[in-house]
Image (tube, rainbow, N blue to C red):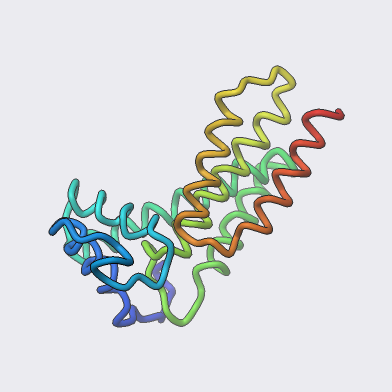
Length: 172
């Protein structure tokens, strides 16, 4: 985060505007146009209600999202390789993922990927556990569903991953 030279675009204000309109009781797609699925405006509305609509505060929340993203990547990779390599891989993947020219760390892209990574982690833990509990599977499905509500174009990837996970869980 310290080495980035990216800037924040004017679209950063979309989420605050959507939150303000939702607070006024307006309904997406009826009272205002929404170019994304409704998940992200509602998530941001919830964050604004609890914390603040200050851009600086939201950017700090974005930093926590980035750290959480890196942590869950680490948890996933540490089961596949040594811990020091998992640490390096998670840092490298996080830095590459966030190294675009335009960065809004609390944007719908990053929330959606974070929910997807958490879902994958929960499935991985469930597959490794051998004692299958429905709670982690249900939580993984809920995080995947929220990811769909935030950004819909991950549907194919997630459904493919869940289908493979289903096969592994049932036929291993």
